[in-house]
Image (tube, rainbow, N blue to C red; front, side, top):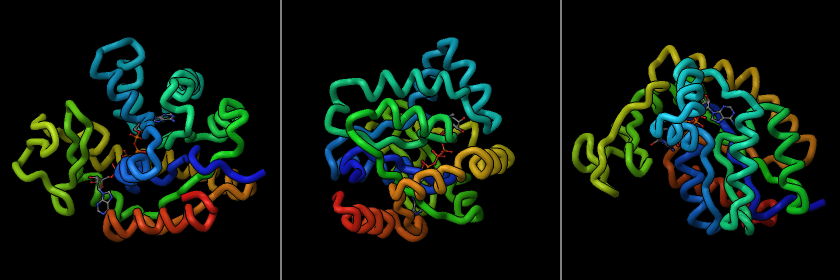
Length: 221
Ligand code: AP5
C-alpha cells in the first residue's frame, strides 16, 4: 500500500529541528503541526494534574507514559482540522506508540516518517541556546536565529524563556532516552518502506529543501 501524502511523522533526537521543520512543512502542506511536547507544556502551564505529572517527567528527560500520550493524540488527530492530514512532531516515541498510531490512523493508510539525522554535539549546541516564546511558542536560537530585541518575541512581543529540560544534564538524559526508546522506530518504519532520512545539519532552509526532496522522492510533496 502507498504511504500517505499528508500523514507525516517527524522524528529525530532532541534538538534535531523537528519543531522548526514541522512549522515549515505544515505551512507548505496546509495541515496542522501537532507537537506532543508543546501540548504537554501547555498543560503544565495551565497547572492541570496531567500537566504537573508531565512536567516532573519532562524536567528529568523521561517519557510521559504511553497511555497518557495515546489519549492526547487520539483526541487531537480526531479533530476536524486533521481530516486532510497532520504532521506529528514528537510522537510516536516508542514502538507501542507507533503501533497504536497505525491503528488510530486506520483508513488513511501507512504514515510516512521523516527522520532528521543530527550528531549529539550539534544538538547540545542548539538546545543550550534555544529560547521559546511563552505565549505563542515561536522558537529562536541565540546564534543562528536570534530575536530582534533580546528576550522579546518578534512575532507577538511575548517573553522568551529557556525550557527547564534544556539544561545540559537533562539534554544528555533525553538523548539517552531517544537512543533507547525512539531510535528503534527507524527500523520499524524502514521495514514498512515508510521512512525518509535526511541530513538535519546546515541551515534551516537547506534542511527544509532536503525534506521536500525526500517527500518528492516518495511522490508526496
Ligand atoms: P519535545 O518538546 O518533543 O522535545 P524533543 O523531542 O526533545 O525535541 P525539542 O523540542 O527539544 O527539539 P526539536 O527537534 O523540536 O528542535 P527545534 O526545532 O526546537 O518533548 C519534550 C518532552 O515531552 C519529552 O522529553 C518527553 O518528556 C515529553 N514527550 C513529548 N512527546 C512525548 C511522547 N510521544 N511520549 C512520551 N513523552 C513525550 O530546534 C532546536 C533549536 O535549534 C532551536 O533553538 C532552533 O531555533 C534551532 N535550530 C533548528 N534548526 C536549526 C538549524 N538547521 N540550524 C541551526 N539551528 C537550528
